[in-house]
Length: 78
Image 1 (tube, rainbow, N blue to C red):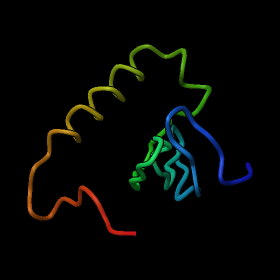
Image 2 (spheres, rainbow, N blue to C red):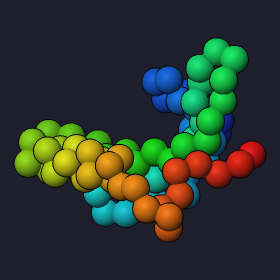
Image 3 (cartoon, one colour):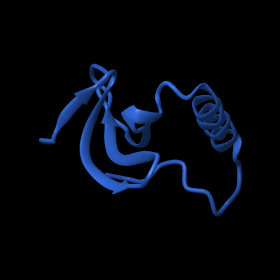
Image 4 (tube, one colour):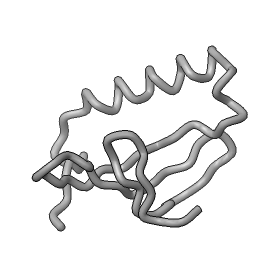
């Protein structure tokens, strides 16, 4: 996979890690006039048809988005 690579409203810059069920990318928003670094965790294609896994994955994302703590990083400078 070549980088940078468009992915919806984001641009994938580098794959950070790959596990048995998902892969993690360093990315940035691709919004006009605005840029923010983000981390994207993407389900591997062979798990997309597993509705139980997809539900669990979405629940994990909702939980992570709600975390508010001094030791949880929400953004890092350029």
